[in-house]
Image (cartoon, rainbow, N blue to C red; front, top):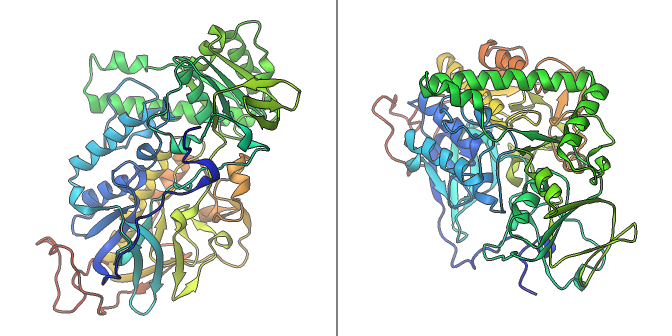
Length: 535
């Protein structure tokens, strides 16, 4: 049996550390943690709106991309349309509705090049902790490079753009008698580059976005692929290409086409979501009829009939119904059952049936990790984030000069990222104009918690992480709305000044010497140690 890098959920090992070195120290106005969709988007917004600011992006991996650099499994693609997954300011010009991972990473790389971000990104840097000092109005962010060398960033504003899951390991339950299996056990988050599954029998455990992507893609060359699910998920076929876009491209500029398609898609998405939540039984019936039409008569619709309402959990989309085609052709099959144990030749199911397999793929989900696992402290006191509310789903109650960028769970991630980044820029401008050096959100004592920032989602990864995530309130700025139009008004149009925000005058205090390049000529440079007085 070949070596399996994911067995036991082991994280990649760091190189052995040499002699302890003096820490590199960088002074910046804004520190962005993460060079994925969120981090690159915010950096572009800062370049557009705040050209005087000195900012840096720190990224643990060696390339831009985040999720789209990490995942390499067959068929990796977006699970939401690219016309809303793309940035507001950077048109997605391909007619494909769901793009593959490499195309998305290329889009991010091109965006970074457009905004000349390469000199502002520190790759291979792992941030471990961040402490806010009320005395200096600065964050001290401790990190290390790939060899364990210490790096310190002193920042006026901290922005976490790390997403919400653990990059070192996915969720990986242990199954009885795993060690008896003679083949490979693979988790999609750590896909071996040299894995050859041509002609082999593959069992994919799971029913989420990863599983429904893997099955039809592997079925093209594997001997047979069996999808094993404990319970069904809503799976909706979606056209692979946007025909309206193709027609409009013949008459309009790329920017005009993108604007039209983006807004049409947003409106239709919001309307469909509202209908699903308002008339769940009717919509469920319609969805099941749609799926039934795509399946052969010998495939039981029970495998696609969840016991919950639409959007109680995330829904899955399949381009041109490729999963249904693989099932109809017989190159793939689906079973809904429990797993009793692994055997030497496959998986023994609770019903008594046996799934023969040479390779088992555990597409069992993700492990939620808030803020990339970075320890946050305020004046050296640890912050229990799971006890804090979110303000406009961007700031965290009681944590000064810090924003955490999260996307939507019921729509494209980037829709929320765009307007959250815009809000951060507006907040920084407001602080600059009024001479403020610190801002912190405070909830009054009457504000009650109403679950986590994921709202009503009942997905397994949400339930498992309930004790690790920030909370949301029941009303106003503390309520996470998951509604683009409402958030657009709140984040892009509503005044920055708010009774729930406390601002403090800017202090002129000494900070650590900077090793960054000299600020642009347009920056205001004073005779004090506080070189840039933007905040």
